[in-house]
Amino acid sequence: MEDCRLTTHHAMESDKMFQVMIQSSGKLVLIDKLLPKLKADGHKVLIFSQMIRVLDIIEDYVIHKKYVALVVFFIQ
Image 1: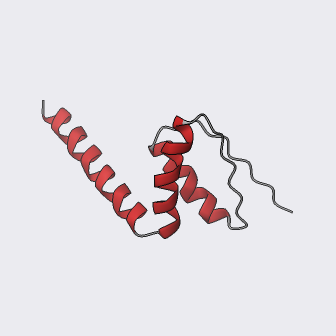
Image 2: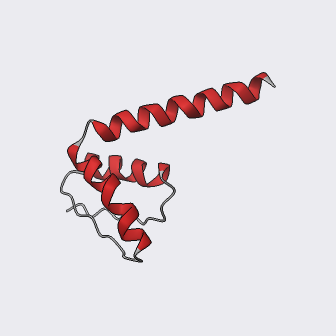
């Protein structure tokens, strides 16, 4: 029973941290508003960035939101 409470607590803390991450970035706030609307209308989204760290953060966001995603890196 205690394991269940710990898991629930961990999930709540993870969600809280995730919301703080979204609110601290204007780009993530915009993505968080747009993606659900685009998904509901059946759109596909392609995101480009020259900064790999930005793509890593967006990948974490997509995984957390349980969106289907393909991440492709092209490094020259």
